[in-house]
Image (cartoon, rainbow, N blue to C red; front, top):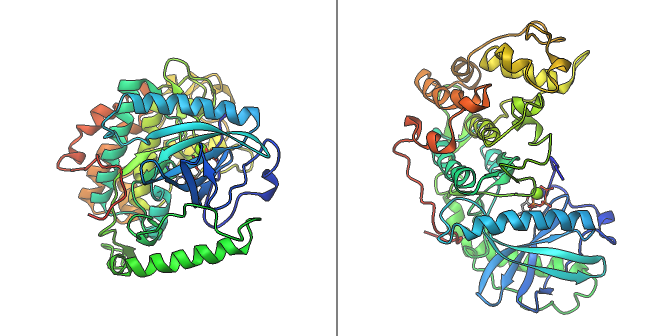
Length: 429
Ligand code: ATP
Ligand code: MG
């Protein structure tokens, strides 16, 4: 079930070939679901397992995200697992202030390609990856990184301590802002009028949809031109003179999403979890993992928010594998892995000799995290020191030594950071 996916960007579409028996359900704008309660408005995104639609909930007069799973048994199985986890999350957090995606409803929908499990989710905005792109990969101001980090940690603390759930795939793509960066794309801020029935002539999903969509977009754009104006300001980043977009006016409250790979802490089911760049060393070495694997991915995510670049981007090379390169990169930044840990995993022998040295990558170029932040990303010495002081313990090679989410929330780097966690609705403040 594990998938390090390349899902739903606006640059590409899902494959048409996947609209077949067992695959995606074809949706036309205005289609209704669950006995007429939800009406499809437009596509929000897609993944390997599903397409996700902006839908109007006629019962609550509200917008929601409708995730329609592919219909083959393995996809239904995965959706049932996701629903189980999301239901546990929703049940224990009735006030909904834990920074985790909320499941509103779920049901089955029969279509020409089979029976599709559907999840009705709270409507969220852009992913943190899009936010990083928006900064032109220069990274966010540290105060925004603090705010976002606190929100993610509140979510992780809830998952880990109260529910016993390991997320297993934490990364910027799987953390969604509660709001869109571009207010035009926000159905509430752009005062979109919901479509309540299939527009006339929309029989085959043809060009009439596009015309209507374009009209709606134009109307929405006019309505929010005023708000949009204040978002394009740029500012000089300190030191290196490159421009960095300011996030003034962008709401950085966020939610942890995508529980397709999540598991109960007492019964992990996959040996290999996490997307490559965010994968913890104990997962690579097959030494067993727990909640602390999420803390590693969290640290990689916070680093990426602050610098605009992934912390580790391993590559296969001549005579060594991607895994070995990954371990080498970790040690260059974090110091040599203690021998006991290096040789303690089921796959240790593939990468380490009996002294605990990498077999094929012999010469490592060590640096320290704070020096790296100064040299490569032009952090001031004090910013670098404080940030590294927050991150380093989370990147301990010994999983049990990493601070928990609860402990991380107490770190001085996060003191004086206020996050408004409540209010799930997209709205203008
Ligand atoms: P994957 O290939 O990642 O396993 P998936 O089929 O499980 O994908 P998701 O990753 O859950 O699907 O969602 C696909 C896309 O839909 C996301 O990348 C995002 O753009 C959009 N999306 C999902 N949930 C929401 C939501 N609650 N609000 C707004 N957009 C959403
Ligand atoms: Mg997914």
